[in-house]
Length: 365
Image 1 (cartoon, rainbow, N blue to C red):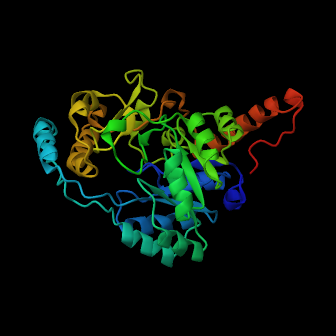
Image 2 (image 1 turned 60 degrees about the vertical axis):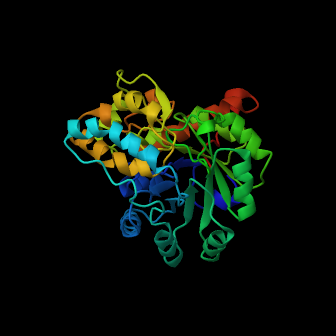
Image 3 (image 1 turned 180 degrees about the vertical axis):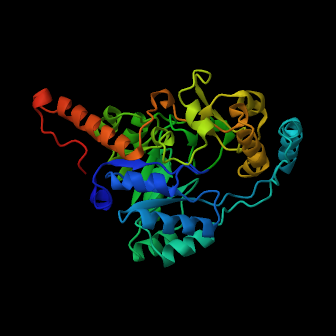
């Protein structure tokens, strides 16, 4: 791994920040203690909620960790499209006996308040999703010794991140579960994202800063592949989602390997932004009609998703999952890191000169 990241973790294995509860302090701590880099997801939390989780994580581990922030979203003009979608969801609200949320609950996710906390009480690493901060933000973090990472989905976004002052980029292939971290939400490019290996190669030819690879990674052999392709580390989300330490809903965990859910798709149905999840009833019925309106649609459907979970109905939940979800393993997070590191070492040994006689150094950063 590159020097910017080397001191943070012994292994080139990063636990992805999964907003919505999965990336809790217990999961991040277990990954950190096993030699990987654990992450907290500040998205959808208040600034104080983020701070309390950081305090809790610090009580569980002394090792470095990361915190992920959502960038504020631009003004969305077409309120009429949101109203149409609200009307379409009226039947869902009646079925789950709940109210639809207020689409105008806020677009900035408490960004400025979270920045202020993270600059005043620094953490080792901060990453950004849904855009790229200004140079002032990167400079502020540099002054307090925080490494910064920007999620990117194109070489152009990676170049913007480097120009703006980011220390590294997290390259997200279209295979990734959850939201696509595109900097601009353009409905005309839905589903047109690049696969991870192709994206790594293109970003590597565009920027000089370190690359973390994310998207569909579930095995150590895949980590070896992205490292060989030029990545400095691999980020895994779905692989950690099913761990007992994960804060994901039990129905969500079970769905990863439930034969009822055979595939994933990108959808705007739950949040108004493209996100990859298991295809269920809600996605099939509402995905084709959901407007490009994030986070308005997220706020609108929040109560529905919670009510579906409370009712034990996975068909009404946002079951975020990467393309490798069927390869999920129900292992404790620390054990999963160890297994991934062993698989990585085996794959790197097999590809070294002399095959299995190669140096057994895989997994060391």
